[in-house]
Length: 348
Figure 1 (cartoon, rainbow, N blue to C red):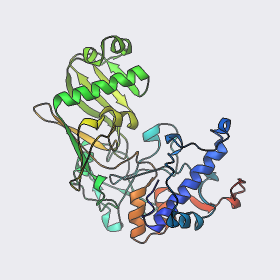
Figure 2: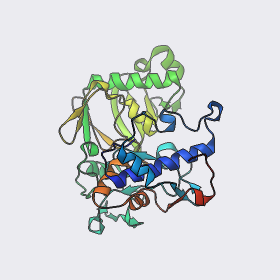
Figure 3: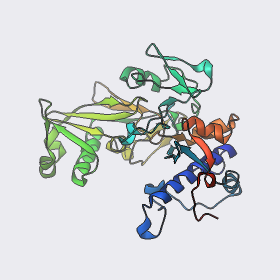
Figure 4: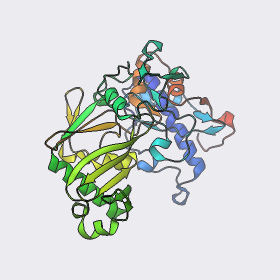
């Protein structure tokens, strides 16, 4: 999950996250019927069977038995690749109950970087910037943040995917989002809600299955992000057709909706990515020009919850040890030895 070339303290932080994740899943017994504790798919954070290295073995051994806990329970140690300058609370991504150790916070260095967002001070909590309600959730402020008009000395500001953009012409966008909506309806995946011309919710799934999205919605008129989480993450996207509209909800469905396989993702370092089947993250905004072409500008890579791996590497390079890294990303947690908690495993 993390390149072995990364800083040693970042590797140690990752080892503690992985151990916490593994033991929590062992307790849950999700794969008992297979005689297993974890699997090698996204259901268990993915295992790619990459060989061990001396650096990764050291990271495991030097943190032997150490896990993250909160209120006596092993935490959900979520992690992701790269932040856009902020992390996200778990319920803004997956709904459910808010976990106290997974919060929105600006990824910034030092007291001197305490800035004002929309004329309201950013609250400082646990020594790091905590994004309060009504800041990055507003469209104007979020756009300024992504466009670096609000300066924050971000931990990851030099990462290639800290900022990215991609462009669709009018027909590309209509073809892409209509195809993905149809796939969601037919597969029963994604949170999809249809509205008639008057904006009244309606069940259009039968019409879509019979006639297709294009016939149901009519030609594409506009796309807007209608709701953002406290950290700025897109939670609802509205697609307006000439005859009807549709709302797509949830960060994974939104990232899949724009399926950028036929367009390039331009990174801030000038390089590009191609062939991706979803957006790098749900931290983005949409701009439409007078010809109906669309530009998406965003930042980060991954869901944004928990520890940013590139952020951990940057913090390690700046001199933070693995415990400081972990307590930054998982607010209020305790780093303790598994055996001292009274848990018994078959780990040797």
